[in-house]
Image (tube, rainbow, N blue to C red; front, side):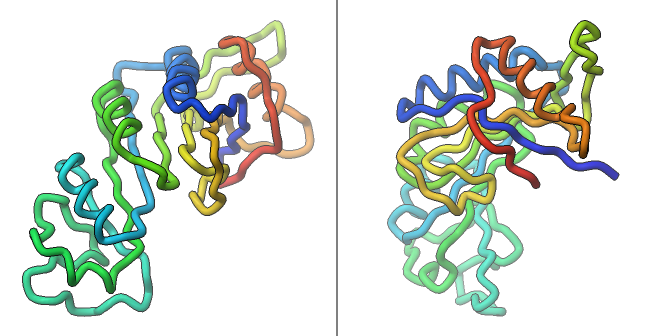
Length: 206
C-alpha cells in the first residue's frame, strides 16, 4: 500500500496559461493509456442547470449527509450520482441537495480539458491526469514512477479537497510518498525542472 504526495510547481491567475503548463508536465509522462478526470463544486441551482447543459456527459453527486433519503418525484437519487442528462428541466427540487459535485472520470487525454476549463466558471475545480509514467534520472539518484505519476490543475482554489478558495490556479505534480530521506521533494524538483518550473510551496498529501 502506498500513497502519493503533490507538490505545487506553478501558480497563475491566467487559466489558459495554467492549463498550458499543466499539459507540459503531463506530456513529459504521457502514455497511450493515460487518462484525465475533472471535478467541480457546484453551489447553486442556477449553476447546476448551466453546467448540466454545457457538460451533458457529466455526473452530479451529493455528499450532504442531511440530504433526503428518498428523492422527490422526477428527481434522480443524487446521493448515488446521477448523469446530467437525467436531471429534470425544472431543478427546483435540487435545492435540498446542494452543494453538488460535478465530475467526469477516466476520459482520454485531450478530450475534455479545454472545454471544462472554459465553462467551469468561478467554482473550485480540478483537472487531474493519471496513469502517467515518470522516467528515472540515475544522475540524480531518482528511479522511475508509474503508480503515483500524476498531475493536477486546481482551478480557483489551493487545495486538493477544493476547500480553499483562491483567485489563482495551481499546478501540482505528484510523486510516491516516502518519509525521511527527501526523495519526494528531489523528484518533484527534477520533474518541475523538465518544464522550466520549480517547487513553489509545501506538499499536499492525499
